[in-house]
Length: 143
Image 1 (cartoon, helix red, strand yellow):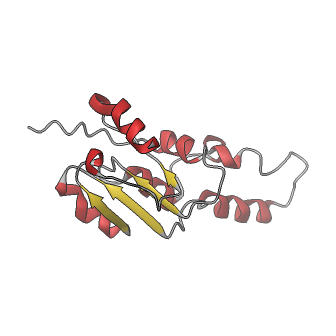
Image 2 (image 1 turned 30 degrees about the horizontal axis):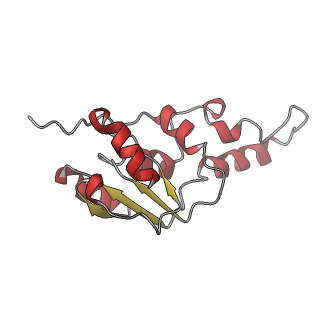
Image 3 (image 1 turned 90 degrees about the vertical axis):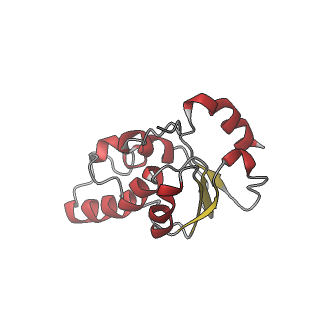
């Protein structure tokens, strides 16, 4: 048995994480990608979550908005806010996940994030690092 510390990120947690981004995303990197749950949830528009569970949907409308058709179309579009990111990079230590990550359009930068020397072209980092090296991963991403 390996000790890769594979703990997939749940959809609700992923929505909360993506909801923290304020600036437009040019290039996102998941340095502990696993099988790509963080990217996949965003690409799919968080399908199992209610509108109330997605942070950036909460303030789209006020109670006086009555046009249901416009509301539904806007909510559908807003759910997919993070689905059109053109540049996605990942790092994943377990090679069994690489094909799945590539099929999502992600470029695999390597196996061990601690060996990646720079993320200079990346505008955003989203990560669920391994618990046994979480601080080291966060500090490395910060650099």
